[in-house]
Amino acid sequence: MRNFDELSEREVLALAIANEEEDGRIYLDFAEGLRDTYPASAKVFTEMAAEEGDHRRMLLDLYRQKFGEHIPLIRRQDVRGFISPPSLWQMKVLRLEAMRNQAEQMEIEAARFYRQAASRSTDTSIRKLLGDLAEAEVAHEHTAERLMEENLPQSVREQEDEAARRLFVLRFIQPGLAGLMDGSVSTLAPVFAAAFATGQSWDAFLVGMAASIGAGISMGFAEALSDNGSLTGRGAPWIRGVICGLMTTLGGIGHTLPFLIHNFLTATIVAIVVVFAELGIITWIRWKYMDTPPLSAALQIGFGGALVFATGILIGAS
Image 1 (cartoon, rainbow, N blue to C red):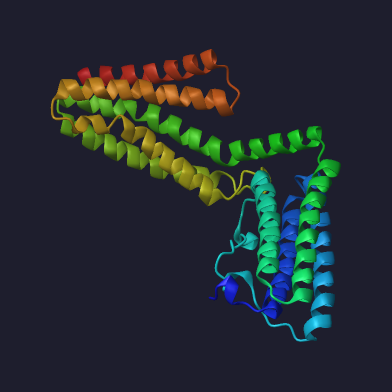
Image 2 (image 1 turned 180 degrees about the horizontal axis):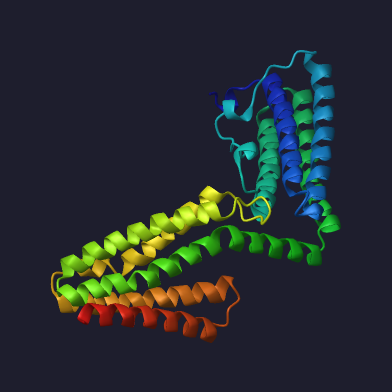
Protein backbone atom coordinates (compact mmCIF):
# COMPACT_ATOMS: atom_id res chain seq x y z
CA MET A 1 0.00 0.00 0.00
CA ARG A 2 1.33 3.43 -0.99
CA ASN A 3 0.83 6.93 0.32
CA PHE A 4 -1.15 9.34 -1.82
CA ASP A 5 1.72 11.85 -2.04
CA GLU A 6 3.92 9.15 -3.61
CA LEU A 7 1.72 8.84 -6.70
CA SER A 8 2.67 10.46 -9.98
CA GLU A 9 0.18 12.46 -12.05
CA ARG A 10 -0.26 9.44 -14.32
CA GLU A 11 -1.03 7.19 -11.37
CA VAL A 12 -3.43 9.74 -9.89
CA LEU A 13 -5.41 9.82 -13.13
CA ALA A 14 -5.42 6.02 -13.30
CA LEU A 15 -6.72 5.92 -9.74
CA ALA A 16 -9.43 8.46 -10.60
CA ILE A 17 -10.60 6.34 -13.54
CA ALA A 18 -10.83 3.24 -11.35
CA ASN A 19 -12.67 5.18 -8.66
CA GLU A 20 -15.26 6.55 -11.06
CA GLU A 21 -15.89 3.08 -12.49
CA GLU A 22 -16.26 1.53 -9.05
CA ASP A 23 -18.54 4.32 -7.79
CA GLY A 24 -20.78 3.92 -10.82
CA ARG A 25 -21.13 0.19 -10.19
CA ILE A 26 -21.92 0.83 -6.52
CA TYR A 27 -24.72 3.23 -7.49
CA LEU A 28 -26.12 0.63 -9.90
CA ASP A 29 -26.02 -1.95 -7.10
CA PHE A 30 -27.90 0.51 -4.89
CA ALA A 31 -30.50 1.01 -7.60
CA GLU A 32 -30.96 -2.72 -8.17
CA GLY A 33 -31.37 -3.39 -4.45
CA LEU A 34 -33.98 -0.65 -4.11
CA ARG A 35 -35.89 -1.09 -7.36
CA ASP A 36 -38.79 -3.17 -6.01
CA THR A 37 -39.28 -1.41 -2.67
CA TYR A 38 -38.09 2.17 -3.28
CA PRO A 39 -38.43 2.94 -7.02
CA ALA A 40 -37.90 6.69 -6.63
CA SER A 41 -34.58 6.24 -4.82
CA ALA A 42 -33.59 3.56 -7.35
CA LYS A 43 -34.06 6.10 -10.14
CA VAL A 44 -31.84 8.59 -8.29
CA PHE A 45 -28.99 6.10 -8.02
CA THR A 46 -29.38 4.99 -11.65
CA GLU A 47 -28.96 8.59 -12.82
CA MET A 48 -26.01 9.11 -10.49
CA ALA A 49 -24.38 6.02 -12.02
CA ALA A 50 -24.87 7.58 -15.45
CA GLU A 51 -23.13 10.75 -14.22
CA GLU A 52 -20.20 8.64 -13.00
CA GLY A 53 -20.00 7.05 -16.44
CA ASP A 54 -19.75 10.49 -18.06
CA HIS A 55 -16.96 11.46 -15.66
CA ARG A 56 -15.08 8.26 -16.41
CA ARG A 57 -15.26 8.88 -20.16
CA MET A 58 -13.95 12.41 -19.63
CA LEU A 59 -11.07 11.06 -17.55
CA LEU A 60 -10.25 8.42 -20.18
CA ASP A 61 -10.10 11.00 -22.96
CA LEU A 62 -7.81 13.25 -20.93
CA TYR A 63 -5.60 10.35 -19.88
CA ARG A 64 -5.12 9.19 -23.49
CA GLN A 65 -4.18 12.71 -24.56
CA LYS A 66 -1.52 12.92 -21.86
CA PHE A 67 -0.18 9.41 -21.30
CA GLY A 68 -1.37 7.08 -24.05
CA GLU A 69 -3.48 3.93 -24.06
CA HIS A 70 -2.12 1.83 -21.21
CA ILE A 71 -3.75 2.53 -17.84
CA PRO A 72 -2.15 0.87 -14.78
CA LEU A 73 -4.56 -0.83 -12.38
CA ILE A 74 -4.53 1.31 -9.24
CA ARG A 75 -7.47 1.06 -6.85
CA ARG A 76 -8.40 3.04 -3.76
CA GLN A 77 -7.62 0.06 -1.50
CA ASP A 78 -4.01 0.30 -2.76
CA VAL A 79 -3.64 3.87 -1.42
CA ARG A 80 -3.66 4.93 2.22
CA GLY A 81 -6.37 7.33 3.35
CA PHE A 82 -9.32 6.14 1.29
CA ILE A 83 -12.48 4.76 2.85
CA SER A 84 -13.30 1.39 1.33
CA PRO A 85 -16.87 1.25 -0.02
CA PRO A 86 -19.18 -1.53 1.20
CA SER A 87 -19.24 -4.96 -0.45
CA LEU A 88 -22.90 -4.84 -1.37
CA TRP A 89 -23.10 -8.33 -2.84
CA GLN A 90 -22.42 -9.73 0.65
CA MET A 91 -25.16 -7.67 2.29
CA LYS A 92 -28.53 -9.38 2.81
CA VAL A 93 -30.33 -6.23 3.97
CA LEU A 94 -29.80 -2.85 2.29
CA ARG A 95 -30.90 0.07 4.47
CA LEU A 96 -32.19 3.03 2.50
CA GLU A 97 -30.80 5.80 4.71
CA ALA A 98 -27.44 4.03 4.97
CA MET A 99 -27.18 3.99 1.17
CA ARG A 100 -28.04 7.68 0.91
CA ASN A 101 -25.40 8.49 3.52
CA GLN A 102 -22.86 6.29 1.72
CA ALA A 103 -23.51 8.08 -1.57
CA GLU A 104 -22.99 11.45 0.10
CA GLN A 105 -19.72 10.26 1.65
CA MET A 106 -18.50 8.97 -1.72
CA GLU A 107 -19.12 12.34 -3.40
CA ILE A 108 -17.36 14.25 -0.60
CA GLU A 109 -14.36 11.92 -0.75
CA ALA A 110 -14.11 12.23 -4.56
CA ALA A 111 -14.12 16.03 -4.40
CA ARG A 112 -11.46 16.01 -1.67
CA PHE A 113 -9.33 13.59 -3.69
CA TYR A 114 -9.29 15.84 -6.76
CA ARG A 115 -8.57 18.98 -4.74
CA GLN A 116 -5.61 17.38 -2.99
CA ALA A 117 -4.29 15.97 -6.27
CA ALA A 118 -4.51 19.38 -7.91
CA SER A 119 -2.80 21.15 -5.01
CA ARG A 120 0.29 18.90 -5.13
CA SER A 121 0.75 18.81 -8.91
CA THR A 122 3.81 20.66 -10.27
CA ASP A 123 2.98 20.38 -13.97
CA THR A 124 0.86 23.32 -15.12
CA SER A 125 -1.28 21.36 -17.57
CA ILE A 126 -1.79 18.49 -15.14
CA ARG A 127 -2.62 20.93 -12.35
CA LYS A 128 -5.26 22.54 -14.56
CA LEU A 129 -6.62 19.13 -15.51
CA LEU A 130 -6.98 18.04 -11.89
CA GLY A 131 -8.51 21.38 -10.95
CA ASP A 132 -11.10 20.92 -13.69
CA LEU A 133 -11.83 17.45 -12.36
CA ALA A 134 -12.28 18.84 -8.85
CA GLU A 135 -14.76 21.39 -10.17
CA ALA A 136 -16.55 18.65 -12.08
CA GLU A 137 -16.84 16.59 -8.91
CA VAL A 138 -18.24 19.56 -7.00
CA ALA A 139 -20.76 19.96 -9.80
CA HIS A 140 -21.54 16.27 -9.43
CA GLU A 141 -22.33 16.87 -5.76
CA HIS A 142 -24.85 19.52 -6.83
CA THR A 143 -26.18 17.16 -9.49
CA ALA A 144 -26.77 14.48 -6.84
CA GLU A 145 -28.66 17.02 -4.74
CA ARG A 146 -30.71 18.04 -7.76
CA LEU A 147 -31.56 14.43 -8.59
CA MET A 148 -32.70 13.89 -5.01
CA GLU A 149 -34.93 16.98 -5.18
CA GLU A 150 -36.41 16.05 -8.56
CA ASN A 151 -37.05 12.39 -7.86
CA LEU A 152 -37.52 12.45 -4.10
CA PRO A 153 -39.97 15.18 -3.14
CA GLN A 154 -40.66 15.41 0.58
CA SER A 155 -43.83 13.31 0.38
CA VAL A 156 -42.08 10.47 -1.48
CA ARG A 157 -39.07 10.56 0.83
CA GLU A 158 -41.34 10.40 3.88
CA GLN A 159 -43.13 7.40 2.39
CA GLU A 160 -39.84 5.61 1.70
CA ASP A 161 -38.49 6.43 5.14
CA GLU A 162 -41.68 5.06 6.71
CA ALA A 163 -41.38 1.90 4.61
CA ALA A 164 -37.76 1.53 5.77
CA ARG A 165 -38.88 1.94 9.38
CA ARG A 166 -41.52 -0.75 8.95
CA LEU A 167 -38.97 -3.16 7.50
CA PHE A 168 -36.61 -2.45 10.41
CA VAL A 169 -39.39 -3.18 12.87
CA LEU A 170 -40.39 -6.33 10.99
CA ARG A 171 -36.87 -7.74 10.70
CA PHE A 172 -35.26 -6.70 13.98
CA ILE A 173 -37.60 -5.15 16.54
CA GLN A 174 -40.41 -7.70 16.25
CA PRO A 175 -38.32 -10.87 16.80
CA GLY A 176 -36.32 -9.12 19.51
CA LEU A 177 -39.47 -7.95 21.29
CA ALA A 178 -41.05 -11.39 21.06
CA GLY A 179 -37.94 -12.91 22.63
CA LEU A 180 -37.67 -10.27 25.36
CA MET A 181 -41.34 -10.70 26.30
CA ASP A 182 -41.06 -14.48 26.41
CA GLY A 183 -37.83 -14.46 28.38
CA SER A 184 -38.97 -11.82 30.85
CA VAL A 185 -42.45 -13.25 31.48
CA SER A 186 -42.29 -16.99 30.94
CA THR A 187 -39.26 -17.52 33.20
CA LEU A 188 -40.85 -15.69 36.14
CA ALA A 189 -42.79 -18.77 37.24
CA PRO A 190 -39.90 -21.27 37.42
CA VAL A 191 -37.47 -18.76 38.96
CA PHE A 192 -39.74 -17.59 41.76
CA ALA A 193 -41.26 -21.03 42.26
CA ALA A 194 -37.77 -22.39 42.89
CA ALA A 195 -36.94 -19.42 45.12
CA PHE A 196 -39.98 -19.79 47.39
CA ALA A 197 -39.88 -23.60 47.34
CA THR A 198 -36.26 -23.86 48.51
CA GLY A 199 -35.58 -20.53 50.16
CA GLN A 200 -32.10 -20.69 48.65
CA SER A 201 -30.73 -18.05 46.30
CA TRP A 202 -28.36 -20.45 44.54
CA ASP A 203 -31.11 -22.93 43.70
CA ALA A 204 -33.24 -20.16 42.23
CA PHE A 205 -30.24 -18.94 40.22
CA LEU A 206 -29.59 -22.38 38.72
CA VAL A 207 -33.24 -22.84 37.79
CA GLY A 208 -33.36 -19.35 36.30
CA MET A 209 -30.25 -19.88 34.19
CA ALA A 210 -31.52 -23.22 32.90
CA ALA A 211 -34.94 -21.75 32.09
CA SER A 212 -33.45 -18.67 30.38
CA ILE A 213 -30.94 -20.50 28.22
CA GLY A 214 -33.41 -23.25 27.36
CA ALA A 215 -36.09 -20.73 26.43
CA GLY A 216 -33.57 -18.80 24.33
CA ILE A 217 -32.60 -21.88 22.34
CA SER A 218 -36.23 -22.89 21.88
CA MET A 219 -37.43 -19.43 20.83
CA GLY A 220 -34.45 -18.95 18.51
CA PHE A 221 -35.15 -22.14 16.60
CA ALA A 222 -38.89 -21.47 16.55
CA GLU A 223 -38.39 -18.00 15.06
CA ALA A 224 -35.84 -19.17 12.49
CA LEU A 225 -38.00 -22.07 11.32
CA SER A 226 -41.30 -20.19 11.30
CA ASP A 227 -40.67 -18.12 8.16
CA ASN A 228 -37.88 -17.96 5.58
CA GLY A 229 -38.73 -14.34 4.80
CA SER A 230 -39.22 -14.87 1.06
CA LEU A 231 -42.88 -13.83 1.08
CA THR A 232 -43.24 -11.73 4.20
CA GLY A 233 -40.07 -9.65 3.74
CA ARG A 234 -38.99 -10.37 7.32
CA GLY A 235 -35.38 -10.92 6.29
CA ALA A 236 -32.93 -13.77 6.82
CA PRO A 237 -34.39 -16.40 9.18
CA TRP A 238 -31.09 -17.08 10.98
CA ILE A 239 -30.70 -13.39 11.85
CA ARG A 240 -34.22 -13.27 13.30
CA GLY A 241 -33.56 -16.51 15.16
CA VAL A 242 -30.34 -15.23 16.72
CA ILE A 243 -31.98 -11.94 17.73
CA CYS A 244 -35.00 -13.68 19.21
CA GLY A 245 -32.91 -16.29 21.04
CA LEU A 246 -30.51 -13.77 22.53
CA MET A 247 -33.27 -11.43 23.69
CA THR A 248 -35.18 -14.34 25.22
CA THR A 249 -32.12 -15.40 27.19
CA LEU A 250 -31.43 -11.80 28.19
CA GLY A 251 -35.00 -11.34 29.41
CA GLY A 252 -34.74 -14.36 31.69
CA ILE A 253 -31.23 -13.72 32.95
CA GLY A 254 -32.16 -10.19 34.03
CA HIS A 255 -34.19 -11.28 37.05
CA THR A 256 -32.06 -14.40 37.58
CA LEU A 257 -28.76 -12.64 38.28
CA PRO A 258 -29.98 -11.03 41.54
CA PHE A 259 -30.12 -14.51 43.06
CA LEU A 260 -26.33 -14.54 43.06
CA ILE A 261 -26.80 -12.44 46.19
CA HIS A 262 -26.38 -14.79 49.13
CA ASN A 263 -29.06 -13.20 51.33
CA PHE A 264 -32.35 -14.66 50.10
CA LEU A 265 -34.59 -11.74 51.09
CA THR A 266 -32.30 -9.14 49.50
CA ALA A 267 -31.95 -11.23 46.34
CA THR A 268 -35.73 -11.60 46.03
CA ILE A 269 -36.37 -7.87 46.47
CA VAL A 270 -33.74 -6.97 43.87
CA ALA A 271 -35.17 -9.57 41.46
CA ILE A 272 -38.66 -8.09 41.84
CA VAL A 273 -37.29 -4.60 41.10
CA VAL A 274 -35.58 -5.97 37.99
CA VAL A 275 -38.86 -7.56 36.88
CA PHE A 276 -40.59 -4.17 37.04
CA ALA A 277 -37.73 -2.63 35.05
CA GLU A 278 -38.01 -5.35 32.40
CA LEU A 279 -41.74 -4.87 32.06
CA GLY A 280 -41.18 -1.12 31.76
CA ILE A 281 -38.66 -1.61 28.95
CA ILE A 282 -41.05 -3.92 27.10
CA THR A 283 -43.84 -1.37 27.48
CA TRP A 284 -41.61 1.38 26.07
CA ILE A 285 -40.58 -0.72 23.06
CA ARG A 286 -44.20 -1.59 22.29
CA TRP A 287 -45.11 2.11 22.47
CA LYS A 288 -42.06 3.31 20.48
CA TYR A 289 -42.03 0.78 17.65
CA MET A 290 -45.37 -1.07 17.67
CA ASP A 291 -47.58 2.03 18.01
CA THR A 292 -49.27 0.63 21.13
CA PRO A 293 -50.70 3.31 23.47
CA PRO A 294 -48.50 3.52 26.60
CA LEU A 295 -51.32 2.83 29.07
CA SER A 296 -52.63 -0.09 27.05
CA ALA A 297 -49.13 -1.56 26.65
CA ALA A 298 -48.43 -1.19 30.38
CA LEU A 299 -51.72 -2.86 31.37
CA GLN A 300 -51.24 -5.75 28.95
CA ILE A 301 -47.65 -6.47 29.97
CA GLY A 302 -48.32 -5.84 33.66
CA PHE A 303 -51.35 -8.12 33.73
CA GLY A 304 -49.55 -10.99 32.01
CA GLY A 305 -46.46 -10.61 34.15
CA ALA A 306 -48.52 -10.47 37.35
CA LEU A 307 -50.33 -13.70 36.45
CA VAL A 308 -47.08 -15.58 35.77
CA PHE A 309 -45.39 -14.08 38.84
CA ALA A 310 -48.30 -15.06 41.08
CA THR A 311 -48.30 -18.56 39.61
CA GLY A 312 -44.64 -19.03 40.45
CA ILE A 313 -45.10 -17.79 44.03
CA LEU A 314 -48.20 -19.95 44.64
CA ILE A 315 -46.57 -23.09 43.29
CA GLY A 316 -43.30 -22.45 45.12
CA ALA A 317 -45.01 -21.70 48.45
CA SER A 318 -47.41 -24.65 48.32
